[in-house]
Image (cartoon, rainbow, N blue to C red):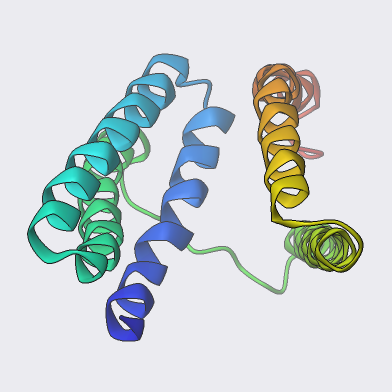
Length: 168
């Protein structure tokens, strides 16, 4: 199980990066289509592989979905962006972006730690059904985050457009 899960790590890590770049380029239609395709592919693979291989099928479906996702997104990414240019880490802008990214990683780890701590507290003081209700509430709040994602989808590219070339 661990080998399949580890093999899918690259795909599950890279697909949000490619989707974020497409969002930054305001490729709204492509991003929406990819999210629909990824969701449908995930559902089909889970039903197919779990039906065939039981628990092993769940991990196989994660690996298969991540491979298909990366192939689909990479092809569209190459059409829109062209060749991938690696940043020069000696530039000041790259250093600022890396510090911004590291703070985002820190906040993400802090958030996940807080979620884990909340789950432990709920399990110690309540029961499994309360934990299920908590998880459902987190899911609903996550769906409400679509509004925030929609706002950010346009916000950062618009700010970048209004900046002069040297500041961008």
